[in-house]
Length: 274
Length: 152
Image 1 (tube, rainbow over the protein chains, first blue to last red):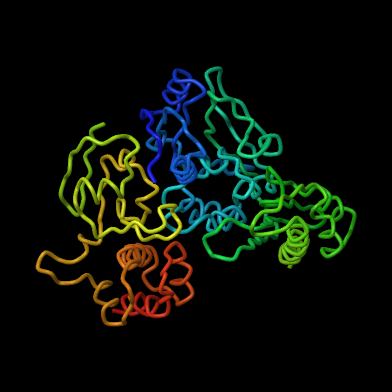
Image 2: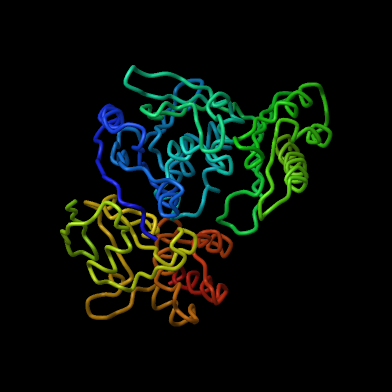
């Protein structure tokens, strides 16, 4: 399968990319690693008329200690997130989850910013960064703004980014030694999660993000409230689907997804507390 | 758009449509047909090549994205005198293939895996090859081949 024809321009910097996307308008899209966009274009699920290739904006590939958080450039590849010693020390849940994205070939090319901006609720990193309380930095023609992960996801493949805005950095709070677990349920190793759960816990404080349980990644606030109120992992996990709105597909019914969310949340909380 | 890509050490400059996939460029314009197209949806790994030394799925890369990159395909693995790459030799000695369709991709993914992890456990080999499917389900000997290559 070959994508429909499009024009291709290459940006050397974020500023140039934003200028180009503004110039070409709504039909243009950013191309980072291309491992979500190119398959979608081959299947005609996306048909942009212009691709602005930001894959060579190398100054947006970094992982830096920002004091209370780790700052990750949007064009940092999954493999670099997975293998980062800085993230292994301060945000191990994110490094671990990045190691579950696709397969090694995909992780060599796909980027964290591309995955988040694509806003696929079945992807691992949107729910993981949501659970971790991350902040995303977007750059547009009028400057830079910060968007909380909790405000970023608005629907299937729909984010709070304006068409002429580019995700440039992800800021993830340090976990401060919190326990954590990433539970991904699928039938084949490289598949998207049928349901996934990213969780961390420190005493009575926790964060739980759900993969593929609604049209957006889901922050399971009721679980966190239950843990804060002293509930056991098993009892808190019963509330796992309270904020979810799962859909049925060929892999799972709604009831099965709810069941999986509860089981995986219980396992994640038990492992995080372990 | 004009691109220049080094494939197996030889520079190729060519005019491509932006929508040309890297695998098409390699097979149809350069004429190296050892890289197979399997699922064409980045699931099966048959099209795996090395891009700047790391395995990637050439059905999911645009040729324009590889402009300026160094690509290695299965044709670039053996020495000029025909001596097989140790991974190819290990696949041959351990019967790491049945129909052979997935083999070029398996060899490219396996060499990339060993470059990152020279002494993997069997489990690490299985996980490391998660992006490559063998439709004959001949995984056992593929894994043995990779482990044998790591030992040698």
